[in-house]
Image 1 (tube, helix red, strand yellow):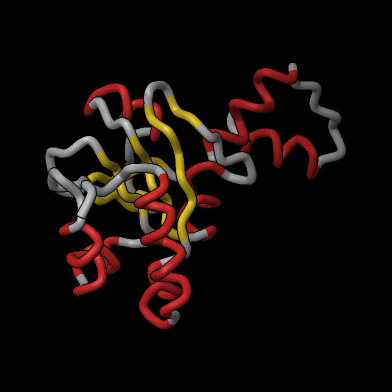
Image 2 (cartoon, rainbow, N blue to C red):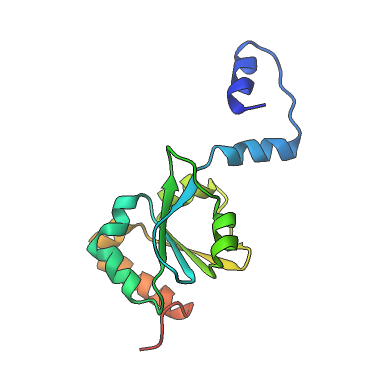
Amino acid sequence: MTSRHTAYLEAMGIPVWVRKEFAAQAGRDELAGLRLGPGSGQFLLLCANAGETAGHLASDIARVFSAEPVWAWPAIDEPGQTAETAVDEHLFTTLVIFGAEAAGQVFGEDVPGVIGPARVLEAPAMKELANDPAARSRLWDTMCSKRLVPAR
């Protein structure tokens, strides 16, 4: 039963009983999948929209990695793949999420620390990074401490 059918029944005053695992899956179905951009590295970088991947800041971030990272964004009005599927199919070892907006669209309230073999790191939003030098410094410190970038 879709969430739309459930809403109709609830609007008519008909109680709907759903097993817990089905309720959890229904909430997951409402989340956005991922749309992947080009790239071939082991890093998946998730931002709020496709426009954020094309700017100078995104280019600067991508250049610090040893291999070209893959940018991704939530697939809002189109089908996308889940983060779990993307990690499994492309063998990503790290997923960096830029901002709470992107995290919420893809994962809801529960952002996992690990997806399969990939660790998940949360970073400031791209807008914050563009306007706040302290946020850029924190991102760099995190990337160095987690050994995401080669030693300089």
